[in-house]
Image 1 (cartoon, helix red, strand yellow):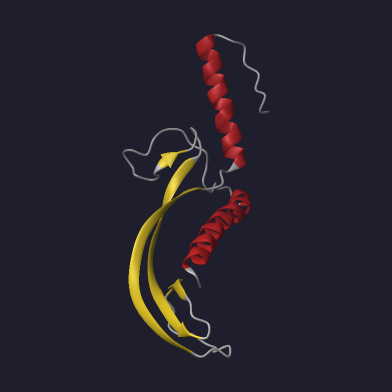
Image 2: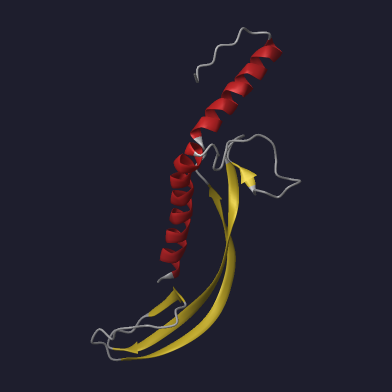
Length: 142
């Protein structure tokens, strides 16, 4: 698998897994990735925020990769996630040189937020702001 496909697939599957788990966990009385206020400076739970309720997590990658350089009728070079077995010749005649390396990097990812907790938190913020301003509160989110 090419490295770019591996990264893309991994991030999509993480986000899709969180999204899919939200309904099932909600049915059990839990919340997956609830909307919250505050910072993570003391706990280190997340990296940053997109807005007050949408947190950005760092996904750590530590991947073994192969750099290949082929010569022959279909010469090509590439960077792919290392695998233990490669199958198929595809009618190509070639000599290949492989170099294995490890790369480590982080990708920021803002996961889907639980909508129920987000609505509830927005209502609480609006109520608190209305009390500060002395305004009679009626939520537009309800």
